[in-house]
Image (cartoon, rainbow, N blue to C red; front, side, top):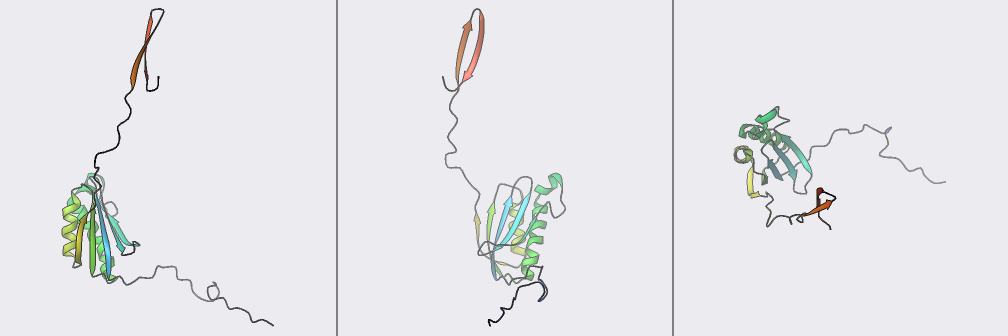
Length: 155
């Protein structure tokens, strides 16, 4: 007779760990997206898995106050506080966007006590832009004294 295979992952055998386990993260990547209306800070591990994130909107700023440097500084502080508790010591910083919160976010990251290995600007820049749309041609049709203009790109 065959032995029964014990189930190790069933609900009856023990408690289900519903909370995410806090991983020890010695090194990570801090992504800062600074637009004119908001600043979003995402902290990931080196593999790209999100560990912590914050934005000026989740920190309690509303309306035009979300785009301010102080809102960016507060968002960085909230995002980094949790990862410092998990043991992050070194980080790389990627800054994207034209917003006012870029410099304030970088200043707040430097004051947090995390050693920065490098700071990179990853704002997307168009080299020569997209191809412009085809010019529309104008055709005028006259029928028994009624003139009508037609805009058409394929005639």
